Length: 634
Figure 1: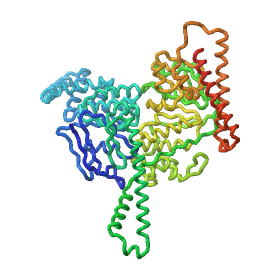
Figure 2: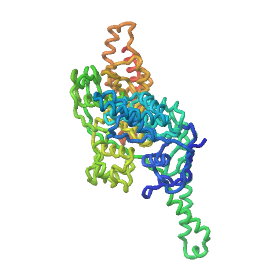
Figure 3: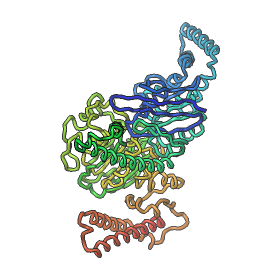
Figure 4: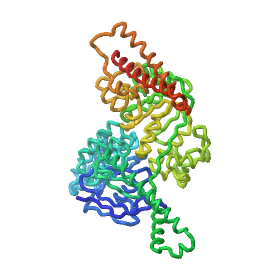
């Protein structure tokens, strides 16, 4: 049964049509993923559905008494109300009454003055009478149940909470009115993985209709029953899940490109005909002329698909082989233990993921690894020649009133990228900022556009150690996949904090997990590798994880240490020599890879090329065997 229908909707901001005669029907019980590139207008479409934005043309129909609730993309930083007050405000008309009753009950419990107590009792009786008259007791219980379900503390100020818990509060506020349609704009932003898994399960069992925007591909795969795409002002509905959508979308774009090519060829032929001599123009077919004019208008109206971002990292000179060595390091804030006797070794080229609950100490661990904090016990030794670039998820140092250009490079119109002098406008176009956008203030940018600007600023700085703290927030899928490719090919060392499970699986070669109570463990591979291993975590003594990732068949499951028998002297000797053997193979492998990357490599004699490629294959096999043997001996 339809709950809401959008018909031939038009809405423009400036010269860009965010909705261009777009139509959409939302039925009861659907879980719809709204996808589209950054800046296409997804958040604006949600505001239209909510009734907060007015169409320029077209119509919107809502079922009688339809309740629509909205979880916005940004969480408030300055909310001075308590958790209970904010959640209760999600119930229209009676939410404030529930809050007043709740606050009076708590005030009465603490008061000692008799006169003040009597006045509070009178107020409480008045609130109770109003609640009974409006049938508000069940609503108050609903507020308390929602707070409990999301593991929140009702009397804590929202402003004091972490970003993840603020988002939980706003989600509880959106859910408490039991809406017919729940609109979620990037609901997984700032949530830790445990909270994301809880949210997935909650929404899968939610009886209402959901329309959500998310960059988290795993989240979309598990939740969406239908894909709705906003692309160049048009809305296209795909009546299946995300993975099948990807296949069908590729076919659709190929057909569109073929159609445009044929149209352009026919237009060129007609333009050539109209430019013929005077005699031809005297006898020309007026219908054909009108058709040409129509073709010109159609071509002018065509909006090509937004291009892909062109991301290039400016890599500094290589660091030393050891980037950071941690030996039984501990760190505490007062009585709170953050890290307890953690040991690891990060080598040049490693790609390390860090995961953990919000507030578990991921940022503290990064500061320890970078030498910004000294451990309260143990030792952290940094490598040599480190050039660090740090991506901060909070983007706190943007001047929101200044332009995109001013925030990139202090207003200068030239930047140095990979040793080349470039104009700022051309460089920003690589990050999908059109020339007209570079003078726009940052406060007008969407979340995804701000993230792209931060990446653009980060990539100017040469670095051999890249630290990314939640870089995927608000990025569209195309840019996200391009960032993945860039990081996979990055020759420096990467430390990545992320709650995006697929992003971690596709990039990192090891995962450090903040388990809580100071326990920090390291696992080979990405998030799903960690899930397979966590039953019996293994602490590794070799940290060359980049090669491990290239040999996942040999290392995706790390067996626990055997307790059945002790290693023989020969086996222990073999185990002691394996790290050196692996390192030599990796050095040779890197030398050959560098050799094959040279522009004239394939211009050599064929047998030399074949020998080199054959040796590379042999090294991969030898490394796989070495790692497998190391695991067996461990």
